[in-house]
Length: 429
Image (tube, rainbow, N blue to C red):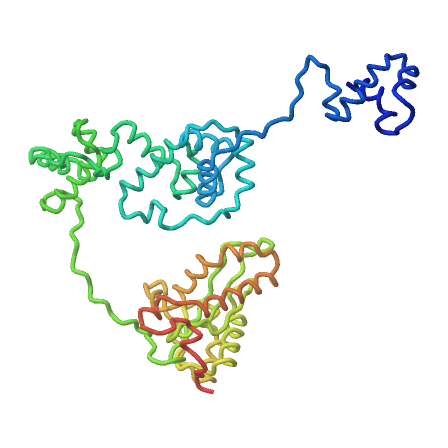
């Protein structure tokens, strides 16, 4: 075919010479040149095909059914996470129409529908009927959906979805109903077993439930069941040794230094940190108001000394005035002559408590120090210099003073924020 076109090209394209001259130039019969020229002008390039080959225009490719196109649009509006082979499988299961995954990809890209987010109505967790929600999983699975798509579309975990499919294949529709949890038969243990456990408890009063279960040698009973029987026996029988008898609860007494107004009583204490800076464990000293529980002042130092305690007291008095009473422990930093002299000049009633005699509960700083330990000790441990430690200490005090405090919630303060409760109230100036 290219040779035939090259033969007639000067005649049909450039209009040079005659067929007889072209035949002489190419050593071809003039009728051959005339025939190819006539067929080219009538049929174009198809006229140059050999006579044994039938040449005809290619017909239009087979169209995809409209139902398949509409289904692609519907699936795209439901969920945007399908992959091509999954869509081809879904279309084949739905219409019995075999389609190539590349064709499905073209239909998906040509679809004018915009994929939307999953509607809450289709969420299995909000479905009014749990069995129908589970049936929806089975339907989508049998329609060709992948488990990943079902899990993301219905917002289910894979183990839950696998369990429903397994239960449906084993029990059909009955497997989609709610099953009662726990043992199917009622838990009944007869009285002789309880009596036998009771005698073992009397003989071995300090043994636990597992040891009593092993001594009982009853494989049909679990150790937890024996534990429940032992608990019942302790309540029923009074002659089991080493059983604590709950006594009457003492009536709660008011705190000896419960403040009724701001700056009535301040509390000061120091805590040695659990980490070290250059091999030295530093101290955190804090002054607390007993009424609204804000931290009035604080300092960090390598030792718990009088000068540190005086600096904290000076800072608190400079900001908030002078309190009526100051409570501290009996440490040397707070019972020194210098500290006592300052309290005397400022007319502060200093009352040191004796921790060795069980009076630690009188110092309200125990609770804030526990909050400091749980809330900020990790941040303190990340510091490597005294300046960083002091900066973190100030950040903790600010965080403590501006967040809710449980004691203020119980006292019905609104908002229960230490600094907000204290406000602008000052002590004696």
